[in-house]
Image (cartoon, rainbow, N blue to C red; front, side, top):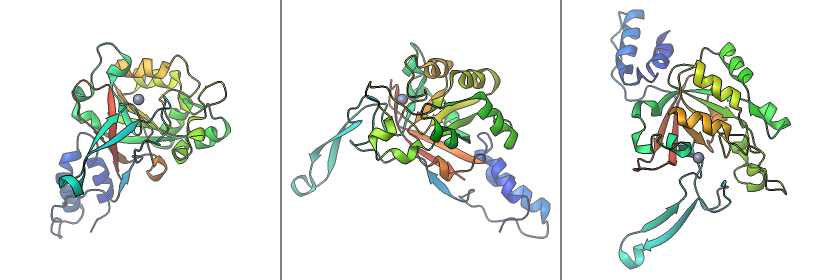
Length: 274
Ligand SMILES: [Zn+2]
C-alpha cells in the first residue's frame, strides 16, 4: 500500500543522488504518516512503470550518412556449429545512441570515461510537437525551456533535457524521418544554439536528448549545438523513442550505453522509470 505522501517520497527518492536511498525515504514517510502500521517490507521496485525509450536497431534504421548503421554476419549457426553467433559491424552514431564529449572535441571524455552517476538522470521532456508540425526545421528555444520551468519546476541538477518533436513516429519512413530534400538538406527539429548555451551557463544539466537524427536542427551546417554542448563535458542522446509515453517531469532516465574504450559514442538502451 502507499499512504498519502508516499508517491512524492518515492519520486524524491528517485533523484540522481537519492536513487539508492529510496527504501529509507519511503520507510520514513510511511512511519511518519501512519505510525500504527508496520513499515512496508522492502521492495525492489520503487516506480510504477518502465518505459523503453529505445528504437529497435536494424540495417534499415535511417542514418545520418545514409548507410546501414549496423550489419550482421552469421559467424556460427546452430544447426552446423551447435550455437548461434553473429558478428556486427556498427556505426557508433546510429539508431538510439549516445554522443560522448570526444565526438566534437579534441580531448573530451570517451564513452567509458563518462561518470556513471551522470547516466542516471531526472528526465525533463520539452514538448514542441505542435511547433514541429508547423515547421520541420523548428529550433527548441529558450522560451520553450522557460515555459517548461513555469509549468513544472526549475530544471533539476543532473537532469537530461529531452526534445519531444514527434519525429520518433517516423522512423519507419526514412524520407520523412530525415526530411532530406532534393538538395540533400535534412529537415527535422533540434536544439537552438541559444537554448543550448543558456542550459550550459544557467543550469546544471547532465545531457540533452532528441527524438530526431541530430542534436542540431536538420538544415544546420555548422552544428553549433554539438560544438557548444559536447566540449562542455556533457553527453547527448539521439533517435530517442517513446518520449510521448513519459511525463514532462518526474521520470528517471537510465542511460545503458555500451562501455567501449575510446568510443566517441555508441548504441544505448534508454530506460525511463516512471
Ligand atoms: Zn551521434
